[in-house]
Amino acid sequence: MDKLRRTIASKEKERNAVEERLNSTKTLEELKEQERELIRQNEEDRAVINDENATSSEREAAEARVAKREGELARLRTQVQ
Image 1 (cartoon, rainbow, N blue to C red):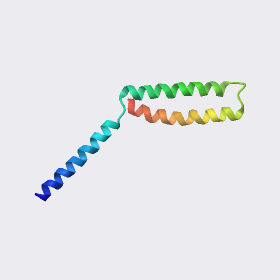
Image 2: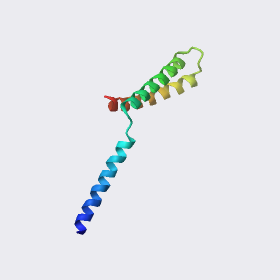
Image 3: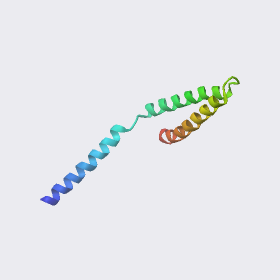
Image 4: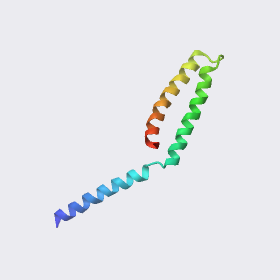
């Protein structure tokens, strides 16, 4: 009887973990919206990078943000595809 209870408890724990993962998973539309937002932010930063009136520190900061977002986009795109 104890073995059966342990088995049931183990299965319940496993089921709860799966449910938690499912509940925390973003929908495809949410992932695509996040992708669009990152792309929009990169476009804004690329405008700063190409702006002749931007200081070198502004350009460097924009380049760093773009590089960081490109990594996020790469990870995100593996989830979207």
